[in-house]
Length: 496
Image (cartoon, rainbow, N blue to C red; front, side):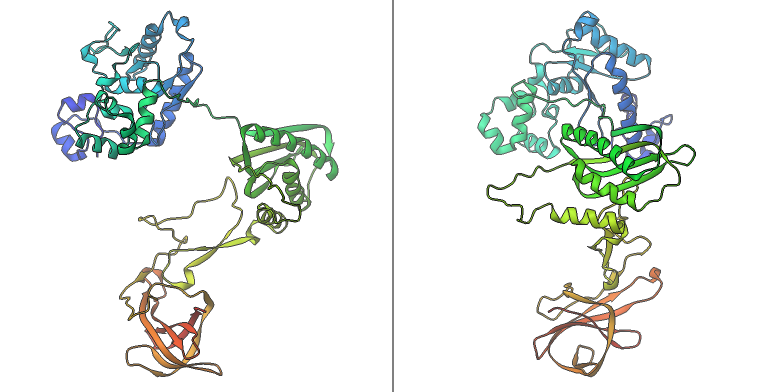
């Protein structure tokens, strides 16, 4: 699909056209690949450049920002007025090849709305015009936003469509409605956007520059070989890390420790956490456990601690009568962190369900504490379903149960490998009547099935099974299947 420029629109190209249609209408059409990541990076560089006009520059919210917000409060005097500030900024942008429109208003929402939807040909307080004959800067000392379309409020498409169906196309029409009915009929977001546009609700602007990394470092006057000296230096660095995390109200999900030597390459030690934390004593305990497992080749000349991943940490308040002996909500995360530090990341795992019809592959074990920043996201198929790496999906065909609601259910206990059973009597084309497993003999009272499970031809080994849920005279429900290639029967799980 095509997102066209103004000149392409004049040639007859419209948004939503296919590339072939657009090239048929405009033979000299210039086509460029859409690169969202590169666009955002370019906008961030532009935001850094725009800091010459304001110390506070923010990107538009959303997955694909296209606008910049500048808080020019107190900055206009340096450029002999707001109009000159805006005009100089646009002149410099135009000189760099950008095509931009701007607006100056008392609120962020009003400035965004005027820059996008103001009818520039209707006139403006600025008399200077660009090469297209349009005034590039709109300075809005009053409230001209009431004549703008509803889309200028930055509302979801569904809300805009509902308002359009009711004949409400302009902001002024929406303002004239009773205020309580607006929130009840169209949602609280509509009232919030209106209040922000007209200055009745404060707006926050978040500067685009990200906070510096949380890190601390030190160097020794002489190389240090003693383990105790290294640990004492780490304790001081961890106190600095805790203070920085405390100010940002976040916790560390991963901690990196770099040990530097005179000739040997730096040694990196990573400590992962099951839940974010920032206590220097707690982080130091985990870090010392990892250091005890490492033998240094040379003396240490410097240390550096870095927190590559931070997350919001939930504050915990003790109950009024909570004692030290009461189980803590942090007991399990602390236990997992300690076990991971002692045994290694791959030794502490959780069972994770996998969308795979073949029962042997419907579960995998993943580390409880992931490795940062080198962890990989689970692979997914084209429809977004998670998939085990290197294993194509299976097919489930021809599944139908007689009754009982057991279709698609899996037993609570599944055997590591299907166990062969002996079938002494069977309904023709259906479930068995009597089964034997070793010395145990069970008469079947009820049965449900079959549920056929087949693997795709691309998996390699062809698996074709008919699964049944059977209930014995004792009331036990087993999950069994018949292999279609040789007719043998196996027990795969138990529901009780």
